[in-house]
Amino acid sequence: MEYTKIQRREARICFLGESFVNGTGDLECLGWTGRICVDANKNGYDVTYYNLGIRRETSSELKNRWLNELLLRLPKEYNGKVVFSFGVNDTAMENGKTRVTLVNSILNTHEILTSARQLYPVLMISPPPVLDKDQNARIAELSRQFAFICKRLDIDYLDVFSILEKSHVWMDEVRNNDGAHPKAGGYQELAEIVRQWDGWLNFLK
Image (cartoon, rainbow, N blue to C red; front, side, top):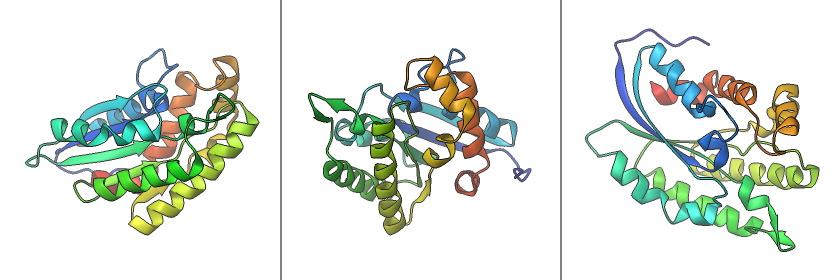
């Protein structure tokens, strides 16, 4: 799908989440978030891009910082927008249990999104797969719960988990890297999925 050629429009976009938002593993230091903003700028938009991904952060930790992060960067007089993507760290095992329970992940996400959508246009993108099959089962369930939350709150949600789980590029790079993060090729593939998503295109317009 192509962008409509229009006069350049300014947008300030904050991307909040964990290491996959940060782009960990990408030696080009762009990740998927940087790539879709580069593409938007090439197609008539003037995007100010804030990457607010923090490695190892869970939804419980994100819940405590997201609002202050946005208020600092998205003054009311500007066209501020927000993209969330998190959840992998919630499902990681630590001391014999997940770092955040499924119930608390759902409650945290509902609280974050309910408040954020009252202030800014919001999108959410699912957590991606990793190499561990058991953790992927937990990520898949969390992604389904996120989809339910977003549907109830009328927030566009993109399930990239089910696409990337079948992607040779993503999974091979994860396997050959650290078992969780891809390199530039995997992030490029994820960026392409987001770039063609109607939710992202409408979000920019």
